[in-house]
Image (cartoon, rainbow over all chains, first blue to last red; front, side, top):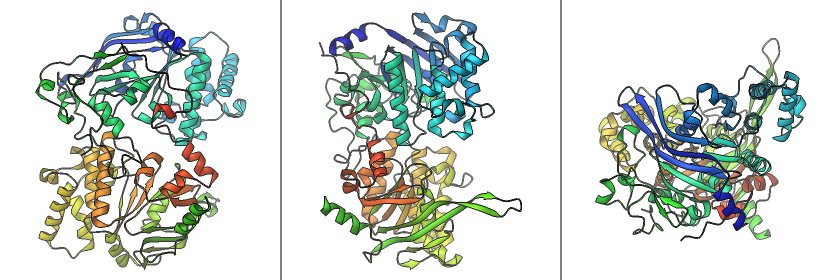
Length: 340
Length: 295
């Protein structure tokens, strides 16, 4: 087990994001940097979580990877999928990669589907977009995919419209569409947030199964740490546009080294620790035009000192595989952080 | 085992104590599902079917279940924000099932509600100070200076500053607005508050602030909460008792600890086993890979 893990860590990188920055032109504040120097990689068969609250830049990061941002966005840095930098490709070349090599599913599956076409049509269209085949073959492939993602009576249900499906079923359709061209990377942006817990479990289980079978690398974007605990191999925590900590999953939960990560973990409901009171992080995420160069969490951090608010703080390595962006990480114990 | 189920059965009995804040019996609410050519209803669907429950003074009863189970409908029926087809509702000892408008208004000062999305539940065109004071205006009996005093005191209590009074909802964050909604719900000194997913729309780090605030207020004022939520891990922390709903019916009601330790109904078990792990070592789909040794 350890050996295979080690090996997998060294090779088979399917998605590598480096130095990714996204700026938006806003009417009030001019060019504003929303995503700042984000870097991470996803390997074959691995699930990497990108965790953060609203306003942390996690969704913008995923849209930037897919080149799905609007024109008022400026993206720099590199996004390498299977040794090709997407940022250097033309729109046309990108169309060949999006959907075929990298696929994406979103939070509200019903809104991502076209209400005017049957689900079968929509999946078949995705198939025909990337592969030369007849309509009939594309339809057959769609039905096959529906079967694979666990839609009962696939041949019949392919003729249904999205409104005839429940949220969980729509997410299965989205998954079928995402898998239609055998991608190497799946980006899942809050795939289960709008779903009930029992359905969430089914969808997470399905993603996991497909991953084992197809060797997909999955980037899971979520605000929900328990979903991360359930399925991720490692996770990067984002705060105010920057990654503040990135570690293998057990390490992250057992030994968080950034105060924000510790705060988030302490805010997860715990019947023992929270018998009286839940852990809280004071304050709120700043809006992007108030992002500073030094530590952005400092105003909310019980451990902040003068040194936290002067210079840019780089991500530094602890051990071999644990990155953290905090100058005081060696001096502080985060055991009981964030209990008033 | 038999001991715990015994306790459970007792706590499930809606007539067992005289200190109930809210007692609902046999409540049913149906909506038209089909109409014929003349517009007459030919088929109905029960959103809530024969629901009985009791919330005691000072306790938190959590109403859990998946979307569409009828949780919110029960919450609204409890204060007669919508009318039941049958069944009875007693709030703080008074039967409100057939009460007239003016009497009902009085009751709604003592039994209030907090909704999921404060952006939608607060009037976007009213300043915060008006939104908080409005229940007192509708109740009557508060002098202007009394109203100002109470608004100021509650505003401070929920952790907002005086300058927030002049603001409008769009100028505030979700967490701040939910505090406003809490202040509004408490300004007439209610004894029971129906909380309909009060933190579901809030960010993680804000969520625990609001939960802590609700718990503090509960112990200060001996409030009873009917706490509607789909979040089982949160409910586990804050509820005294839990009622599980499925398709319009309560299928199980028990002490929180007992329900989690020993759910009797199949569906409760399914619901509990679907809660995602709190720690990667407890996950089910695959083992967590060991962290690489440092150095």
